[in-house]
Image 1 (spheres, rainbow, N blue to C red):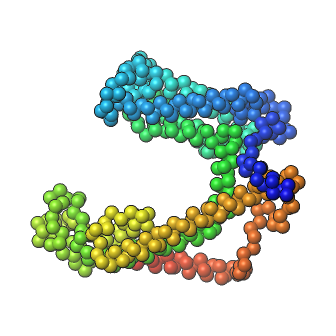
Image 2 (cartoon, rainbow, N blue to C red):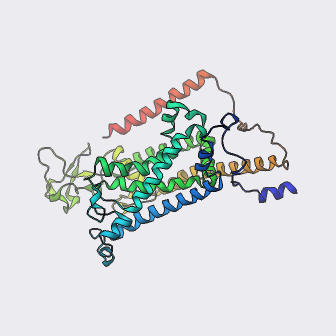
Image 3 (cartoon, rainbow, N blue to C red):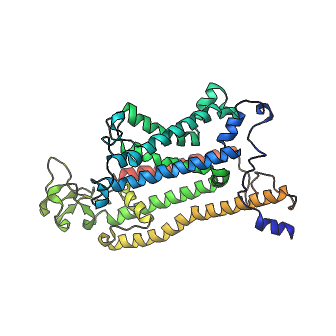
Length: 405
C-alpha cells in the first residue's frame, strides 16, 4: 500500500537539491573557481537569483523582438507603426540605424539588446572558464574546444555572436536572419532548476531505446511512400488535367485538354497555342515520373490534397488508399513514442521508490532490454546476406524510379 501511494505522489522530475549536489568530485572541492561555478549553475541563493534575472532578460529580449515588427511602417500599415520615434527605437527595438544610437556607428541596435548581449557575453566567458568543473572532459585547451560545440554553448553563441557580426564586421548590412537568432535565447530556459533539462533527457532516452523499431517504422513509411508514388505515376501520367504551364507567362491560361502526351511523358501543347521553342518544354505533367510523383504523394500522406479536383478516376482510388495508409503510417511512430514514454515514466517511478526502499528490485538488469518472444539468434553470415539482400532491393527500387525520369 505504501508503495502504491509513493507511485502516485513521487514527482517524475524532482527538484534538484542545490545544496547537497554541486556536480564536482572531491578533487575539485578545493578549486578556487568552485564558488563561481556553483553561482553560474544556480546552486547558491545568489546564483538562483541570477538565474531568475537571466530569465527576465531573455523574456524582455524576446518580447521586444516580437513587438519590434509592429513599429515598421514598411511591414505594418496601421497607425501604431508611427508611434515609436528615434528615441523609443533606440531604447527598445533597434529597427533603424539612424535612431538615437546612430553616433555609435554600429548599425541598428537598442539599449536593451546591448545590455542583454553584454550580460550573456560575460556569462559565456565565465562558463567557458569553469567548463572543466561541469565535466572533466572539458579540461585543458582541447577540452575547452570540445565544450564549444555542446548544446547550451551553441545556444549562447547563436544568441550573442550575431550582434558582434552585425555591429563590427558587417555594420552596413541588414541581416534579418541574424536578428532572428535572438529567439534561440529561449532555449536557455531549458536549464531552469534542471526540470526541463531532465525532461529533454527523457526524450533522448526514449529515442535511444526505441531507435531500432523507429528505424523499422521509417523503412515501412518510406516503402509505402515509394509504392504509392508508383501507383500515382501509373494512374496520372497520361492525365491531361495534371498538365502544368505556370512556368511560362504565355501559356498559363491555355486549355490543357488540347495538349498531347507521348509515350515518354513529353507534353506538346501546340494545339492549345503554347508551342515549345528551341526544345524547351513549356508545359509538363506533374506526375510524369515517379520522382516528381513522390512530391505530391508526400503531400497527400500529410493529409493535403491540393489537386483533388484534377485527379482521374484511378487517381482518386489511389488517393483513397493513400488516406488509409497515411493514418496507419503516421500512427506507428506516435504509438512507439507513447509506449517509450510510458516505459521511461514507469522506470523513473520505480527508481524513485526503490531509493526510498518501498519497491522490490526489478528482475531485469538496468538498461537490459527484455527478451522478445520468438527472437532467435542469427548467424553472422545470415545477417550479412540479409543486409546485402535489403541493399539490392533498395537499389532496384531506386533504379526503377529514376528510369521514369
